[in-house]
Length: 497
Image (cartoon, helix red, strand yellow):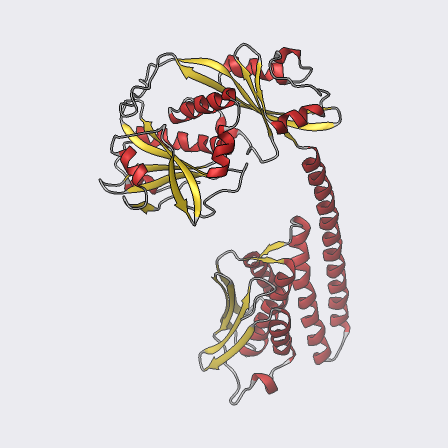
């Protein structure tokens, strides 16, 4: 992940920035195969380095869980990186550093622009155990990984940004340009047994396999770019990602202290293909089952919404027939409460994942109240302001009822004797806490009003929902300028205010 503005802190031209952004897009797959965290640094003045890109591996636990792009380091923290950025690279050396008490193996590689200018350094950090495991792999794999890393650092890997991540339980196969299998990881060997290959495939020609591998190898070698494809075989679903491995036609290593960058006209010779294989059968089956369940849940919410709207319509008809003003008002208030709950189910019928945008809920509820409670000849405005706040469905339902009751109370009591006025609903996101603020410019609260003893049914409903369901706090203030209701609650059901 990269900060869009991070390059404004470094002295690079547009061409160099574009080159580093391309390199950053290739880092994730390299981090996965290397089983290491990759950090791309640029010089920030003479004594500091800034992280401009970061890639965390999916194949092992990453060293850095937090976002590091944009962080600036001095010599005491990144001595090896600053040494490389100053023009003294030593990419073959493995440094031992400490990260949060863990012993880490670090290698630092220079990054040259197409014009031969040193513009960045890539640090490859891995747990020492993971580093030693990589060293115990076959020379064929180590050489292929080294050549792939060289391609990435010189911007020669194409199509890597479209590849899906390489995970811990995926296998690796390396096929040479002569179409001979030179390396197969233990995980890969186990996966190919499901395809009927019990014996070792190392040393055999890939064309002997009755799989898509021969076709994929030929395609990658011919086009020199990465490809990913999904296939069905023997009742299982396989995902293969194939990466070209090439080397420059001329050597570019001098002594350890005289690293020679490649020129723009350097040519690359295909060496082979890395195939990353993943058995996606269980994952896709679980995904299909989840999608089926989500479709069923969406249908249930759709029917609940329809049933609530039917109940509301029946109650609205009943309200028209009753002669008692008190009964009529009670029925109309109940209709609005039912429709507020129906709004939540309507959103859940469109998105069954269970997270609801409270801002959208508030807009929908105020629209319903505007049509139902405010006569056309009255100039009473209802407005919502605030940011998107996503809540679990249950808490969103409680909030919908709270907003409905507070706005309805403001109209029926604060603005009852007025032909114009304003009711404002503001949603405030304070991180883990949310505030719902409902303000009207009506008559304010009666003298001596106490929420515990003088509240009407609507305010008692709000008080109970906030304290018992949302585990929050409800405040009500009034003066000659109107009434202000404030609800405090935590986003999570476990939190409290």
